[in-house]
Image (cartoon, rainbow, N blue to C red; front, side, top):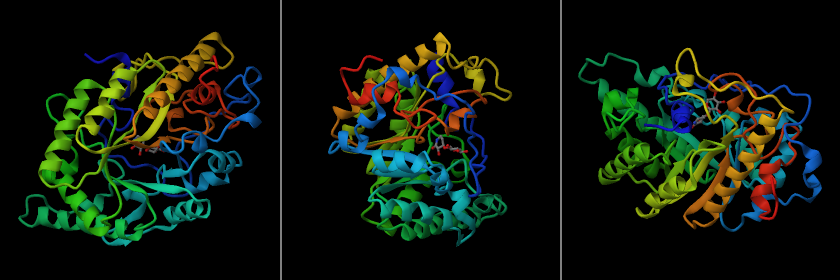
Length: 395
Ligand code: XIL
């Protein structure tokens, strides 16, 4: 039986198994801003933002501090200064996925992704590559043809290998790691593997094909298997089975990306620690790839169904419930960063967003106020920020 928190996250990262894309063709953002007139934290009670340490300095040399962003978000006046001060790693929220890059077979659009790379290079930041192979944001040309024809599988394999080879080659020397395969694991206990189109055509072999092509194209870049809910014991068991099988079949996997889309009450530190340790036991590195801490802790699993039902009612700023949620969030962030700091295997910690004025959780699973990041809607450090950098701070 899943906890409400665990259940609520099943579909948060694509667990519903749809094949929809990012919805971002490169010209705008699909995650709307939360339109609040006041900032998302009670700044009056917090230390002067001018005294905030830079996260990237605070956590050096333990791990890199990353934030996800797309190039057009750099136009937001709050975004650039926050990145420049705190981040030394970036992940493209959308523009390095296969849908925007893979226009058609062997035809690519790198324009937006290259803008992000240029910004990172100009400012001494790394870029994590996200993501080569995913059940979402996979353009339909990959799968075109008649699956009943004898040559179909070989044709799709050639498309996959060409895509991975060309994209990894394009970014060779410019990315610090690649999320080669994203969300390969099933949420359904009856199977270890997500029943994606990739899986339907190749079975588990698609992971091996993708990782081998990536390694051949750039032998130096660390290759990561990225997944959500690795902290949930049953999902973790399935994840480890998929990981071990891929490695046994020859996939050159260097590390695991734990998305960590979590909430203020879930998961527990021991569950996340167990996920980190399982990876360490295999001699691999850990990346925290998409950390955010939702304020919603009691969504039913059906909240991720269609239509969504049983979602926790939207919190309202200025209410005691909202204040309590921010406090729990701060304690959760503190617990997580303190855990990461204990593990030398953790090489990067990336937040899925920059500040609360833009987060995918404003729309997912339903449109509602959600303030899941370390910086408020004015990009000011929240309680969660101070809890992370100052052990004496009381949220
Ligand atoms: C999300 C983006 O944040 C959204 O803007 C987009 O519409 C869909 O994708 N897990 C992942 C990320 O690996 O790529 C997803 O990003 C969030 C869940």
